[in-house]
Image (cartoon, one colour):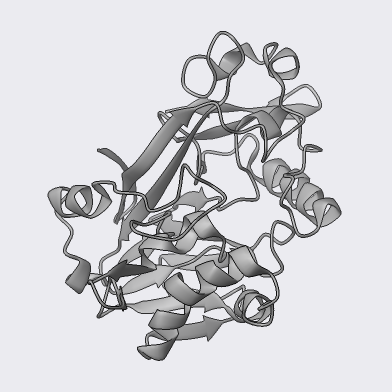
Length: 285
């Protein structure tokens, strides 16, 4: 179990799955011959053969007043065909969540950086009859424009299934707050608009006692995009906007002590952004 301390705030990583390979659909440019020169990614983020390593995990942020879960992974029992690897998954995520010392009933807030399949799955669980909120006493915070976009796309069958089983039930339970992309959750936690991957995509800024960290969401899927900010994801809503976001955020964090925590970064997951010629790399903690 990995932890980071930012002033008075503790961040804990709870892994659902971590895998070698499988990134070619999301980042088709990141072929082995293109990423092998990025030797700084070995061994945490890439194999010596040039296969990328990625993770799906949640981050639990404990502030002096709130306990917050950022993104809730893929979830168990969900209909996810044609993605057979994520279909009807059975993982130990909730057991690991509890083993880390967290009680789902005592979570104060759930932040969804966006509403893609691998960020909302454990919003709900199947109780044998219906989808129920996994965190029944939490406020689920979602960007208003993000929510409205996916709510209106009933004709897009696969994303709409995700909405029906992982978003709609918490709305129906009265647990959702639709917020602006600059929303302040508490003095230590705020949202940062990082648009492009989706219409209302946000990252999560944590600030305490002069220290700062940023949970990326999917404006970065993998550290290789730090060396190639022009590599947009194949599933980006607006590739031009997502590319502009990567350049803007990496320039802002390069050379600072601020910690970058990748939502899909495997292994050590966090580090400092370092300028590497005209582009960037990650120095891990």
